Length: 305
Image (tube, rainbow, N blue to C red; front, top):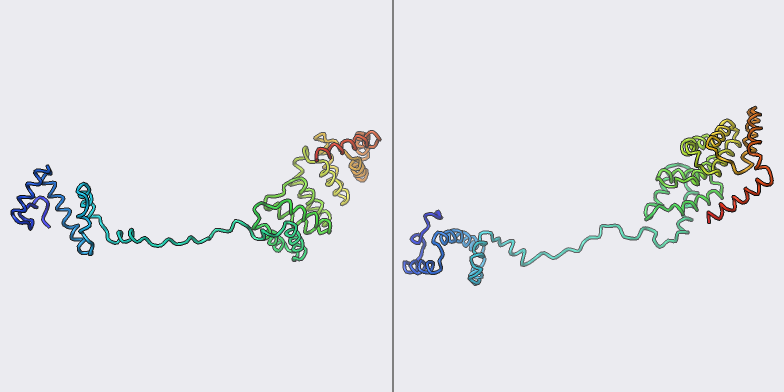
């Protein structure tokens, strides 16, 4: 192909009369000759490419003159394969459902049946941490929320059957999941450890989780730990715990606590401390103190309701 600068009507395969007519038309239309030559230079290779791909050119000549120049300009970008893809788009494939269904496994099973199934499973499994933890993991795998309420019911059922070792395993699994971090759960674990003859483990758990907050630990939980120490003859730990509570000016609410503390002081040979405690909390042993205790318990029950 000739360069644009050398392209003129003498090189074009047109008759002389046709060349004169074309020049006259360009003059009337006001189209500069160099611009027309540039358009022709772009048009010639595009037409050749279209002809090689067996694409009809006639449909481009049927355009309105107003849009013809734009169509000719875009001929150099024309791709027959793209045109065929546009005219015959591939059929849309149906999306494959890879997402998990909205409902979870066992959606139609009642909560009561699920709890009963887990309870029977825990009782039938081998007494290993891996087996118990695996069963609990599988049980909660498809739950939308952590079933803390159901687990509390199961723990109560295990306690009624005196399955203390299972209670310890379930609570420890809950704590490993970051669930059940309440004083009620801690007390349930300490009681189960004590009944499972693991008092040293209960003592370590108390020191790690509870002993640093003696200013706010409920008296019910403190009484439980004092009873554990008293029953297992851990008198030094009992006295130390009671002194820690006194340091925060915590007032015991039950005379049975004072009796155990006084007996511990006596068995340790600390008779003066025994007398001090009995004198300081003597109001708990009087009828007036018992009435105040009953009123306090009734008010606490109303608050819980």
